[in-house]
Length: 114
Image (tube, rainbow, N blue to C red):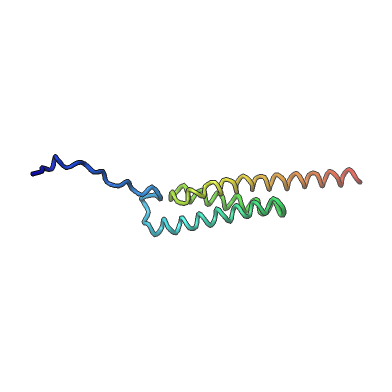
């Protein structure tokens, strides 16, 4: 006859690592979808901003990327898309710097030609 001490210990399964446990699963699912979509949108804006309207799209990309990173940090969701948001923020800065360089070169060429 076996006693409770003869039964080997089986550890419980680990908790779900995805999401902050302070929020209900429905909220986490909605925030994960939102963060994933916003990271993609920010990346698209920053890539398009390299080729046209760098100042405007760069600012939008940085704003969206920062908002997305804030959601990711607060709710601990869509962490696999964090790289997209960081890349969008970096490319947004490059967009703005590129726009400023082109503007300065344009002004310098006009001043030199007059």
